Length: 151
Image 1 (cartoon, rainbow, N blue to C red):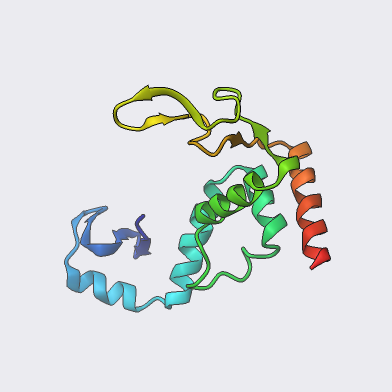
Image 2 (image 1 turned 90 degrees about the vertical axis):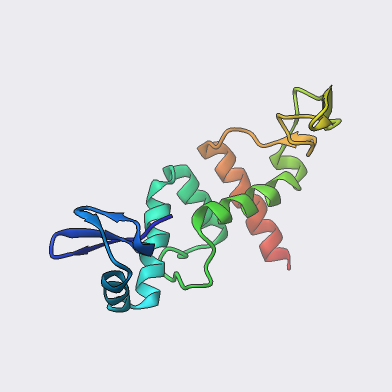
């Protein structure tokens, strides 16, 4: 991922890569990046990735981490990384997952020399998640709130 910094109408890209008007020197880049607070850069990068997500994916992140878009720090995981953790949590809950239709819940399918018999639909997990929909999002939110309030 790259950070886009605009200075006097000129787009400069982090780590000395090609800029709008040709190559930037490391010296130019160092002075520009040093002008920006590290936390502001983190928030910028996080919000750029967050805006690329579908609205339902944004809502899913908000169920598990309410207000995370307002309190981003350097230690906050990127949105895609948060979604991976959320999906893994959902795969462990029986009422949120479906048995893999390809392997029938065994995690194995036809053999190949590279991956053995691992099913490619479920990646050997034996279960898949349904498509992200408002109905499923409500189920996830209820499950999360029930488990969160029980602790």
